[in-house]
Image 1: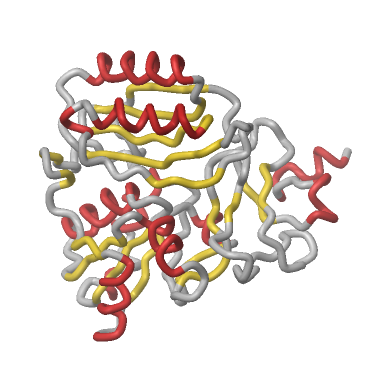
Image 2: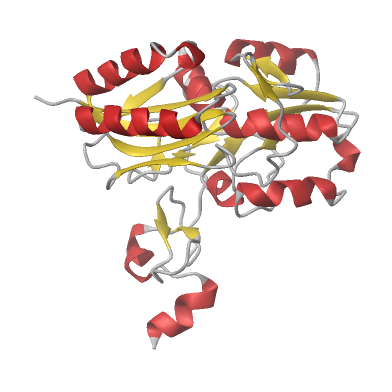
Length: 292
């Protein structure tokens, strides 16, 4: 019986020929029947792919044979076999789109000038010693169904809005406080923490391996609350059956972790919606026209 698996991974490292890496990765994935999304730039690689267990394992082995990618940490999760509609492998200016490629500095060891990395255990040690502020490095809608307790959730719809959000001054009161940035798998925090350091935030940490690694370590018995939003057909995952439901339906307020796209095909807004109202999901901008 086929066992579907999904891997989430990234690696910041200088790449002299991103297009050659793209062609190699595309051919490798196609030969193994993997689907998902991979982005490549001069600064590294970022991907989420899925397929049969034996083929995903072979992909990991072959990718690590390439010297710049030998230390990539692959995070594993259960798949359904239908998590991605197709394979997409592209070259971009950034492997995570903050709209600030000129600010990022990368060497063979990764991002230069970022936050101090914390393992899940080290995070707990830090929290036991001092009061910290958790800073969500994801899109605001992702935090609606899951976040660290007491976290600051910036009002951003996508990562490209973070630079303006930081430059707005609304978080300047945190510049002399310990900040712990976190995101799904760790990649957005790599960039976000470096942007914060360069803007004068004095004590910045980043959760190494992101929420995924934290959930693998502590499940729902730690500081994380709720479900984790994921960018594939699963939409959300729980670390244990005891996960708290902290989301609320945008229509009726019912507690739910269910998320769906707005029914207007041109709209990219994600909405928390209960099963009763799932069929009529539409953001405020498009609700009236869909009803007419």
